[in-house]
Image 1 (spheres, rainbow, N blue to C red):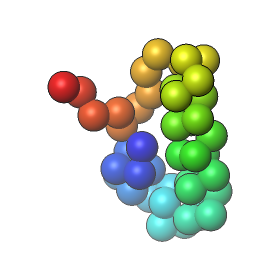
Image 2: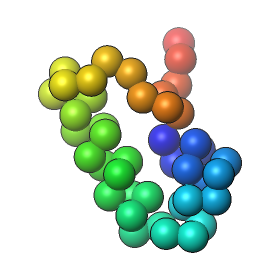
Image 3: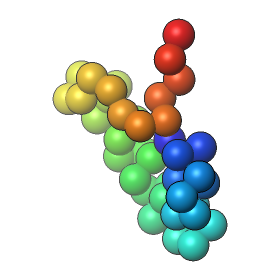
Length: 43
């Protein structure tokens, strides 16, 4: 997720919000609320 945010400049322009978004999305993924998200490593 950070890679996606850095690619469009979000992480640099609003670092605290970028981190909050990442934490929220990762928690939702861990809880099974979402199946995929931009920047997720594909294996």
